[in-house]
Length: 114
Image (cartoon, rainbow, N blue to C red; front, side):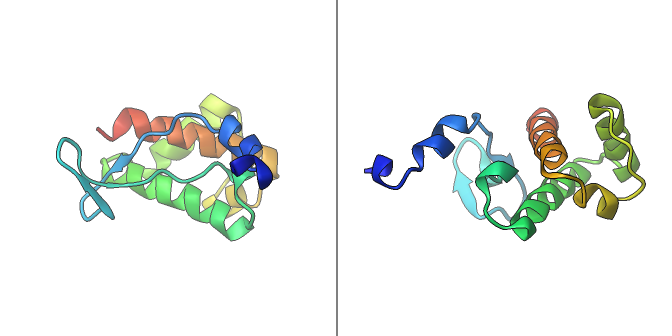
Protein backbone atom coordinates (compact mmCIF):
# COMPACT_ATOMS: atom_id res chain seq x y z
CA UNK A 1 0.00 0.00 0.00
CA UNK A 2 1.19 3.48 -0.87
CA UNK A 3 0.17 4.77 2.55
CA UNK A 4 2.84 2.60 4.17
CA UNK A 5 5.55 4.61 2.39
CA UNK A 6 3.99 8.04 2.92
CA UNK A 7 3.75 8.90 -0.77
CA UNK A 8 0.13 10.01 -0.55
CA UNK A 9 1.24 13.58 0.23
CA UNK A 10 2.99 13.65 -3.14
CA UNK A 11 0.14 12.08 -5.09
CA UNK A 12 -2.51 14.39 -3.65
CA UNK A 13 -0.36 17.45 -4.25
CA UNK A 14 0.20 16.74 -7.94
CA UNK A 15 -1.79 18.68 -10.52
CA UNK A 16 -2.96 16.99 -13.68
CA UNK A 17 -0.05 17.31 -16.10
CA UNK A 18 -0.27 16.68 -19.83
CA UNK A 19 1.98 14.48 -21.92
CA UNK A 20 4.51 16.44 -23.97
CA UNK A 21 4.18 15.56 -27.69
CA UNK A 22 7.58 15.56 -29.37
CA UNK A 23 9.35 13.94 -32.28
CA UNK A 24 11.41 10.99 -31.10
CA UNK A 25 9.56 10.79 -27.78
CA UNK A 26 10.05 7.86 -25.42
CA UNK A 27 6.45 6.64 -25.82
CA UNK A 28 3.91 6.32 -28.63
CA UNK A 29 0.12 6.66 -28.61
CA UNK A 30 -2.11 6.22 -31.65
CA UNK A 31 -4.02 9.49 -31.23
CA UNK A 32 -1.11 11.51 -29.81
CA UNK A 33 1.98 10.27 -31.63
CA UNK A 34 5.39 10.31 -29.97
CA UNK A 35 5.43 11.84 -26.49
CA UNK A 36 7.44 12.21 -23.31
CA UNK A 37 6.01 12.15 -19.79
CA UNK A 38 5.84 15.51 -18.00
CA UNK A 39 8.41 16.22 -15.32
CA UNK A 40 7.52 16.23 -11.65
CA UNK A 41 7.18 19.54 -9.82
CA UNK A 42 10.24 20.57 -7.83
CA UNK A 43 8.77 19.90 -4.42
CA UNK A 44 8.32 16.23 -5.41
CA UNK A 45 11.94 15.83 -6.51
CA UNK A 46 14.68 14.98 -4.11
CA UNK A 47 17.75 16.30 -5.92
CA UNK A 48 18.40 19.85 -7.20
CA UNK A 49 19.89 18.58 -10.48
CA UNK A 50 16.56 16.88 -11.27
CA UNK A 51 14.80 20.20 -10.67
CA UNK A 52 17.09 22.01 -13.09
CA UNK A 53 16.65 19.26 -15.68
CA UNK A 54 12.86 19.64 -15.53
CA UNK A 55 12.99 23.38 -16.23
CA UNK A 56 15.51 22.89 -19.03
CA UNK A 57 13.41 20.12 -20.59
CA UNK A 58 10.28 22.27 -20.56
CA UNK A 59 12.12 25.28 -21.98
CA UNK A 60 13.56 23.11 -24.77
CA UNK A 61 10.08 21.77 -25.55
CA UNK A 62 8.83 25.36 -25.87
CA UNK A 63 11.78 26.31 -28.09
CA UNK A 64 10.90 23.43 -30.43
CA UNK A 65 7.46 24.99 -30.97
CA UNK A 66 9.12 28.06 -32.46
CA UNK A 67 9.06 30.30 -29.41
CA UNK A 68 12.27 32.23 -28.88
CA UNK A 69 14.18 32.13 -25.60
CA UNK A 70 13.75 35.89 -25.19
CA UNK A 71 9.96 35.47 -25.48
CA UNK A 72 9.92 32.71 -22.85
CA UNK A 73 12.08 34.87 -20.55
CA UNK A 74 9.74 37.84 -21.04
CA UNK A 75 6.67 35.69 -20.27
CA UNK A 76 8.25 34.41 -17.04
CA UNK A 77 9.29 37.90 -15.98
CA UNK A 78 5.97 39.59 -16.77
CA UNK A 79 3.55 36.86 -15.69
CA UNK A 80 5.43 35.89 -12.50
CA UNK A 81 6.97 39.27 -11.71
CA UNK A 82 10.52 37.87 -11.63
CA UNK A 83 13.73 39.62 -12.60
CA UNK A 84 16.73 37.65 -13.87
CA UNK A 85 19.39 38.15 -16.52
CA UNK A 86 20.17 34.56 -17.49
CA UNK A 87 18.87 31.02 -17.23
CA UNK A 88 21.73 30.26 -14.81
CA UNK A 89 20.58 33.08 -12.54
CA UNK A 90 16.99 31.81 -12.70
CA UNK A 91 18.04 28.25 -11.81
CA UNK A 92 19.90 29.51 -8.74
CA UNK A 93 16.70 31.05 -7.31
CA UNK A 94 15.11 29.90 -4.06
CA UNK A 95 12.93 26.78 -4.12
CA UNK A 96 9.62 28.69 -3.91
CA UNK A 97 10.52 30.66 -7.03
CA UNK A 98 11.61 27.51 -8.84
CA UNK A 99 8.30 25.83 -8.00
CA UNK A 100 6.39 28.79 -9.49
CA UNK A 101 8.53 28.70 -12.65
CA UNK A 102 8.13 24.92 -12.98
CA UNK A 103 4.33 25.11 -12.72
CA UNK A 104 4.19 28.09 -15.07
CA UNK A 105 6.33 26.39 -17.74
CA UNK A 106 4.20 23.24 -17.39
CA UNK A 107 1.08 25.28 -18.12
CA UNK A 108 2.81 27.09 -20.99
CA UNK A 109 3.85 23.74 -22.50
CA UNK A 110 0.26 22.55 -22.31
CA UNK A 111 -0.96 25.61 -24.22
CA UNK A 112 1.74 25.66 -26.92
CA UNK A 113 2.43 21.98 -27.62
CA UNK A 114 -0.56 20.24 -29.12
